[in-house]
Amino acid sequence: MSTWAHLAGRFFGALRPGGASPADEQWVASVLEPAELGLWRRQPGHDRRHTVAVARRVEMALAGGPHAGDPRWLSAALPHDIGKRAAGLSVAGRVVATVFAKAAGGALSDWEEHRGLRRRIALYLRHGELGADMIRMAGGREEAAVWAAAHHDRSRLDPHALPASVVAALVEADPD
Image (cartoon, rainbow, N blue to C red; front, side, top):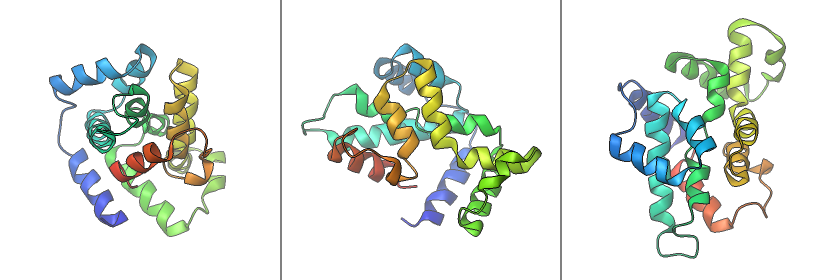
């Protein structure tokens, strides 16, 4: 699936009201540690639904392999987008931020020094790094923080931090 098709799917999915199903909420509570669960629950409903879908795909991809059943890898998938909260953008604002980032090719790094929408866009674009900090400060698992920081920029990923098959499953489950 192309990046734009993936993003369009995320946008239209975000317009649907509500969060994860009660069964999914219960499953997430069985996977995450209390600190991680608290962060996960602070995400908007559409982000909770998205991360459950990602974690379920990771779970299926790892089934039968040496990493099956290890909650660390599902915990990496569930709070990976928590840093988006720092920007405080609506769904439409996230679309604007994504389009600006694609058009600018990363030339928005100085926007964080500004106020208003420009700063919020800059924070949104750094959501991986900010999310990793949030996970660590809350006392979440290091694997979750490592993946949050690297999920959009694999060059930030320490190749020894997560098994290659887990990284492959995480990338396949949420390609962009």
